[in-house]
Image (cartoon, rainbow, N blue to C red):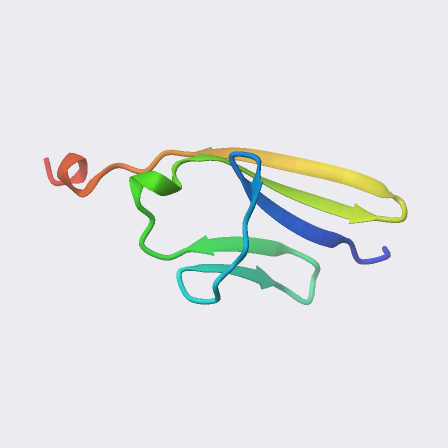
Length: 74
């Protein structure tokens, strides 16, 4: 506490959710999720979530690999 401001990035560039293909979901318990509908190889890369409040800042990163449809059919 207090609730942080949350920012998501993909390969260092801030993500702007469109509410359709890319959504950010915030739960009452304070957890946050980034949802990517029908991910493509262009979505692959490093994702980070940055949480900031007056107590400080923390970042968590994850790498996402997305196989092309051709790769997943074999």
